[in-house]
Image (cartoon, rainbow, N blue to C red; front, side, top):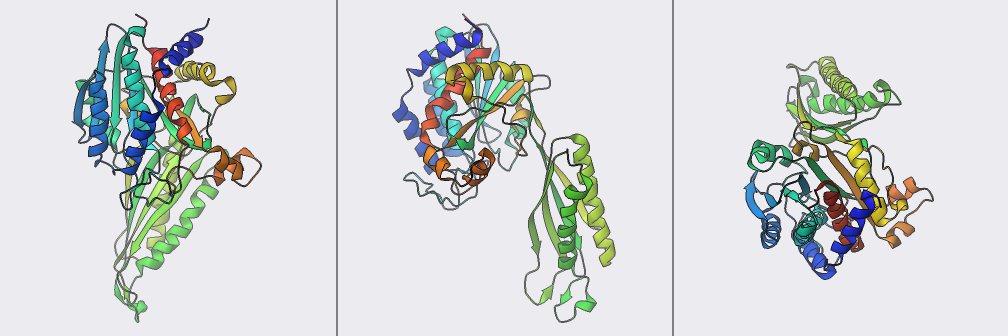
Length: 415
């Protein structure tokens, strides 16, 4: 019997103690009450209460709203399980009976599922502590979406205040027919950087544009020209995404403003490509402003975001093998690199291996009704993360707990 067989068997035994009704009620409650980054007070309290009841030593208020639970269970490895808690400023349009009750805020990325999985996995492992040895650290992370919650937890001393991890584990709900558990060894998620641009012009009356230097027109040229950076300066075999997500200028139709502001996002999977894209952005902005005769050079401010997520190949292979044994060989496949970004890896101290995988969640009827014959066509057609229509199938509640439980068991010691 392989180690994967042993872990899968033990996980199935633990699974018998799960209470589907409790899982669903907890999940629906979190979904009804979403909270934005660093505002996750209610969510954090719910998680902390369950961890405390399960016997964990619980610390709240880490990086403002983060939660850390520690369960020491004899000698052995220290395993960290992480789940993120924040919602998005999205107006929900799912029509679910348990839809968000908070106007303009929704768990459109599935972090309500993440916390449900995390809490239930923590409880299941605590109840089965006679089957493993070591220390389990459960991390409820705030502000993954917009505010750098992982970096804030590190700055708040999470690595010094709590047992240092030997391994960090996490997962994310994803679109795709429910019932699959994609794994990617090595590089899996892209780095993300934001770039703020300020174009300085000369304002004036809309009837006398000749007396102004119009920053709106200049910024519009910048937006257009930036579309050529990836298509004409990045090799076809390399990956990059450049998005202009915000364009702010002016207050009235008949006033030419004195400045325009752009906000860009850059996604890359290679440090050399990253530098090439950022250099090109600066060159395009400065060139267009010079061509327009702007009186002051533009401001180009790079705000570093999340690094690349690079799974430890050996660790990922071990956990993928356990998931194959648990759910069937056909359910685990290589998802490949994506241009999504995460701050998960920042919670791993230098040199500590980590693994981050996915749980697909699209209901079967939604998947079948999606247009297209090929997998990619359907994948692009179903509601995905950050969509106001994102509604994971509740059938993934229990499996998502077992993926975490089995992954933790694969790295914890035996008594």
